[in-house]
Length: 424
Image 1 (cartoon, rainbow, N blue to C red):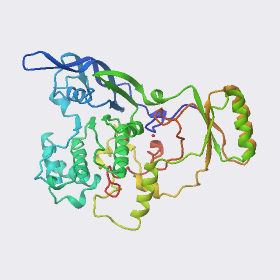
Image 2: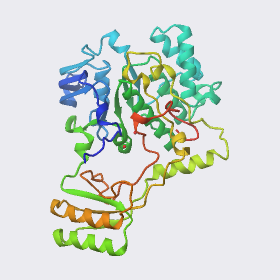
Image 3: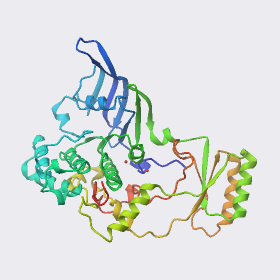
Image 4: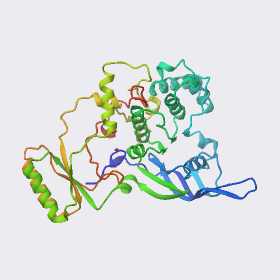
């Protein structure tokens, strides 16, 4: 069984082969007043980003991520090498009009309210006034700032400024969205909705570049990633390949009796020794937190930013027959949490051990004898494995993870959500 994509998208919904961003030998050297080399921020970097792809830029502080983004935006010129966006120079005005950018720090006019802020940024793209107002209304609702529409941006908290910052990055319905730390200052519910929005944009055929120090966000939504250090790319590729541990397998089954468990463990130990772990899987903290907040939301309202709002209609591509993702719709996090499930997920036990194909058939037979009435195969072996940073964790059902995008419902609710606080 192939491991699932980190973003949760079906294999048939992969990015196209159309290259949106291409960097070849990209180098940027900063010089001092006398023209002497001071810092080599980006050093001979090569990568490509395709249409409909969520691409992660990772690395420690000062590794070259922000410099690469500025080169992509045409704010800096390469010292050597080439970079193109939509086949053109990043300095091309028509190319810039197809880009939406959320900087790491929100630089907004503090005396404007949300509607005025979006109207200003929309005018920079020469969007007519009626369309600017329509989009602004949809975006304000989407980011959960309806109750704060009369307040100036200077009064906003960092999280609320982040919300309006994301809205301004989408006012021009961009084909390339560059997000630098988009979840900074947002609570877990808002982070979850930002990640759902990113998946919705990618499903619609837009390209998203995500730079974040929150590696769980990157793992949840990105198809591919590059890891910078010292201005150079140290690793790059699809996340499921970078994170896979091919020297071990995971065996998952419904809870077993003590006798069957001992038989399985003894069989594996006879093959590989005592390097076997037996543990009960748990849900992650994000899933638990979202469940608690949803239960509280049903009983009381909040005076903060609201959640469960729908993605702006123009971002969903409604009425655009040429957009493949125009028909894409999905649920908000809170809608998914409150939806009754058909059956409760079984409690499972897990045994992780080095791969030994010769024992698999015997193990499967033992488990099937223990669970003969299961409607579906109760035994599964997968090459997917825990992240190297968490080798002892197990994969448990996570209701708050992004939904299967091919089966998503009416519309993806709120990008951010106040109740939620507002990236598999």
